[in-house]
Length: 195
Image (tube, rainbow, N blue to C red; front, top):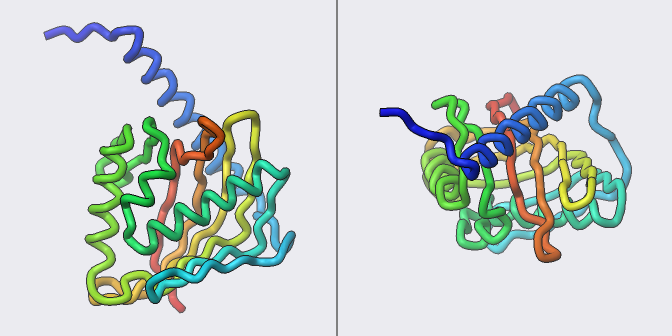
């Protein structure tokens, strides 16, 4: 059977390839350029449960990028609490994430939510699954209705399965629609570190 690529599929494929190229460039930049160290006072948001989400030394290049970092904090808080209904409000309908294990791009809000929720539940078993989640030195660069944020994330997991401290150098891409910033794509590579 021969499949014919429609113009809609070509557009989606082209957009996916552009995002993939942009992400590759950002990951390379992140690997070779040190992140800013101390630009502003850190902020901390107490969570409703026992987990703590905080942000250290944010660097907002402009007022709009400050709003992007605030959105990143809200995304992180809802994720840390396992509140996927609230988490979904910060995702664009066309959000994507790359599954390193299956070497597959996951496309669309529902597919990404299913993927993230499964990963979260698998790695956060037991009481106090996320003890703390810290975003270190986020840098947000806004260009029109698109923003790129690079940062180091550190989470401390309790629970009964794989407790410990994990770090990731992360890159998130946001898009502004109807006056709100939504996550369009993200890259995270979590590794367990010694405390």
